Length: 238
Ligand code: ZN
Image 1 (tube, rainbow, N blue to C red):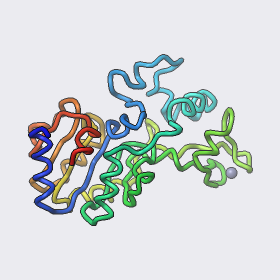
Image 2 (image 1 turned 60 degrees about the vertical axis):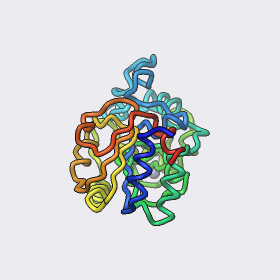
Image 3 (image 1 turned 45 degrees about the horizontal axis):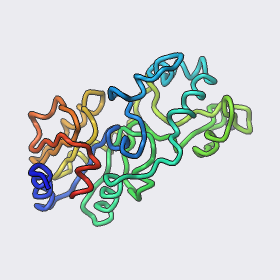
């Protein structure tokens, strides 16, 4: 085992409550494309850039185009939790982990068994009618064609935070509260370049900040431990 992973093990062995803050890199090893990586969604060919398609304005004006892309790229059928998801769920069960804060919308933490998950961008698992509020599961969206409609005729919208939309205040508050309380904060699979990720890390008050990310992040100098590796590679060894 490499020295950096060994150091993370030592940091964890000292005890204390853990909070995990994760980004797209946590899910890439489950086969879910990373929005912002070089070979991620942004480099793929589509009529519009993903950032445009996944915006509130686009959804309201071109829901059919939105759903074409969304069904194709965002629903990721068959994706399964990887070593990181499973380890985090195990830690929570053992009482070592307060919560997971995630930028991902795939629901894989819950699928792995995690209970307290602050989903900053919400989730593809939840969908609702814009007219009457009725909820629909992910499978309904996956199996529908064109623009999915409620029994009342209203358009169904995924409960994911699109560009131009604001984050859920309760989710932010929950994440901030846990990050403040954490003894150990592990940040994984995120370059910390995107709002609100970097801002949330600032609430951490402890002395055990571990960053696990393939590339460099603006927080590398502040962290107590930096591991430039894939998250799955690290979590399968701790
Ligand atoms: Zn309805």
